[in-house]
Image (cartoon, rainbow, N blue to C red):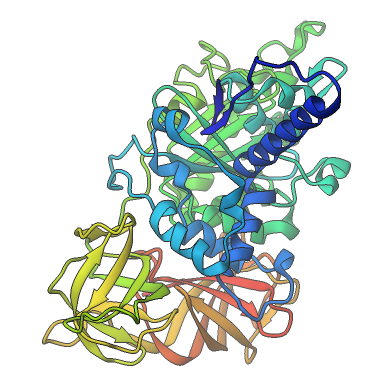
Length: 559
């Protein structure tokens, strides 16, 4: 019995698959296993698309899933992978992955995810270093992001022999091919889509997101960073003029990605200075010591930039993704660095703390009906979703947005349909004490005899990361996604745009593609919103083009 990531493969030795029917059955068995393995190990290319297609999580009117990242954003924010809530031992001992999971209709698949995918793990606190860590690799083009992930997978022994053989050329493995799975990515040698990989060490589990470095794919990077607990920003030492005197100038994409992960409140930001091994050569004695000099100069530039931009840096680590220096095993005193390896550092990083201090807020994702029930003492519908903030228990008074109706919570179910107190970050099913008109997209909010804890408003001020190919101008109308609710939004005013090189704010009449700025919007209907500094869920919106259905921008609400 061999088991990998919860997929069991049993090869019987009672009959050898030699010729005829036995060979055909053996080939079918291997093919079925490879399909299951691909679905488990390649969520960005296979599993995510299948699940998103069945659930139809977000925009019902979108015509092109390839260019609309709203579904990706919501999928990674609201449907935490089941892998995240299980222990490696339990996964390998009990879990199987049957093809029947993908033959369910839309309603059944939503119910299944409501019970299994939203599995509750440890409570996310500021000091939680045991839960699975979701982190991304980002930075400029060809800085070695895909190679770093491949090195982590290989050195942590998280790949199978046939996978290693598939990416090997002339006896040497091309580590970047572990994540660059699209044909266009392999042809051009670049990363386009966000690729997710899973691996575990004896002390922790990890979910890695390989974000693209090209400017035109910034939207994909923002999608991945929106739900990350940490970000590893790679810096290519060979592209910087570290030999020159004065302040070292960082690459624009390094600055842009660093600013974005900071705006998105990613708790831990690690700078990994890569390709330092290429600065020295045994055949050229005069190059000895270049790696240490370059790392010292680059570290100083990163510290100055972070201080100017208000970024809290967790660590700056010298690595060689190609050769493995300081990636999994620490290389003592290499480049004058005496700290832990990158993997050892990741094992100690905390996950994003659950927003338990904010009053209860719950975006309804799915309504389950029990029309045949004869119990009239309470409502006969269960409202499923994920608790965004606060906690809920029976007896709490809630208000429904946008209808404004109030009711009391009669019952709270966890992901396994067990009545239980449920807090922020976990899936829940809520039954009210009476029948109330609640649909997908509505919000259930904490309410007392006093006015609601949340102020509803139609006028908002926000920081925008603009990701459309066309500039953002005042007067345009977009679809805005808040939780699971779609409303129309009109751009009222462009306040200013941010220069990523000087970090200065300039008055502007439009926001250019892949730029960052501040805007004011008017919504068609009021929403219950909090500043993004208080809540990553209530303070976040997505703008979607009404004609092309492309995700155009990510909004972070201000005070």
